[in-house]
Image (cartoon, rainbow, N blue to C red; front, side, top):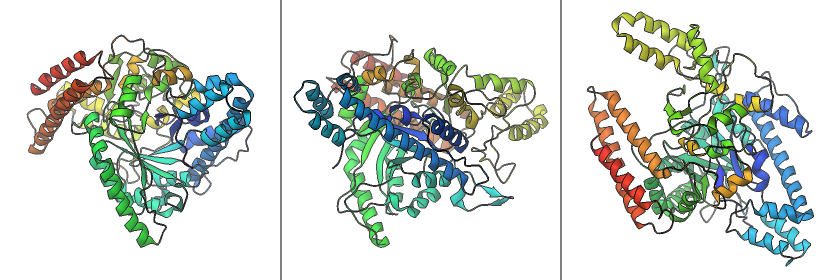
Length: 595
């Protein structure tokens, strides 16, 4: 029997550490969350921490053990699975023993919910304890424990300077670690297509359909537009693999790395998915059937279930419900606001305070990521302090102990991270040789471009160590955090219950008097991005660059016109702010036309 998820929202992956143990914190309530499996060092230490905390057997997996990365990931995911199942069964027992627990649990459910109605009948003494137990056993499920793999963070591994087979690459090993775990959940693939990694899925039977049962392990693609979804989904379908969810993310209005589109706005993208959803299902199903037939595997007669979800800057119950109703998405991702919920995410106290006190001007798109992709950042992190201190001592760069982002092969065939001391020392020395050829301002700009890169491997993991009082080894890096700009309007630490009530419109945790609609926020970010792109090319623009700018501008104008018509028609969700929104759209269009 198919059981419907309890909630209409999920918690996406955030950094390396911020959702590393979110399933332990929230899954028993039916809340789905995603953790990163990039950092196997962090994972190994968290596995030890939680095994000790819950008195589970722990066996250390050192780097001397063959395939240690995959085995560490498997072990930790199995620990999460065990703890979540235990906490979930404990919750069900509490519900059977105490009607107060049932009342508290109901407060965590959507206002319109079948299971909420059924639980209420028990509180009203309209059903027996036996029937109530049947309801709990039948309809209550824990939230999914999904894992995120950044497809492009797939560093080669070497043995005495000799490259190992691709299956030992970082992303490949992470996939193997997930597959070998006891989890029945999904792997979320982000950052674009990696054909070699995508092909590796063919090695694992758990991703293929079986008769009369759901997929044991599923694939979720994080995508920025419909075309990308169709290309990647078709690539996998041709191998007999089904994408169970397309997770659409705003290009600029999300936390973490920002993958800007050519001016395609979230609303326009969601509209296209809504219009072409059945086409996407039919196309990929046909390709999958053909591939499964050729492989001699079981072929499902009907397309497998497919979800379309969205995330990026959502901050109010009205915005949440609008996405569900108008675009018919299956779930909405709420990320950055949960950084202010200690019951849900792993963040140290000082960083939570920094987030709570952040204003709009404190949040910005930076170039600190060694991947060379714009990265949402916040002013005042301890990582910035440590980085500045090293630069002042002529020791720019990180000692680079993890090397997960050691992908640049300009100076070393094995790859170096552009945030590392080794890379920055080489680049600064080369810059010094050219110093006489440039102005002081040009020199400083290029020096800053080299040294602004931050060690994300350590910085994005440290918060969890600090929160759990675990020793931080090696060179001090402080904390890096990558909130979306939406965090500016969430100004205080709140409980899990308060945040859930806020999402479902039964409470309001936003004190800010002015918060732009999340579509408008994204649009303004794209306008700034367009202006910056235009400024950077100055008078030396190539025909290709000019064509790209023209395309972006045209897409933004199309998006503005789409939004104007959308809000003009709205009679339900944003009626109180409709006039202000339409006025804002008109002003942005004028600014864009004159940019």
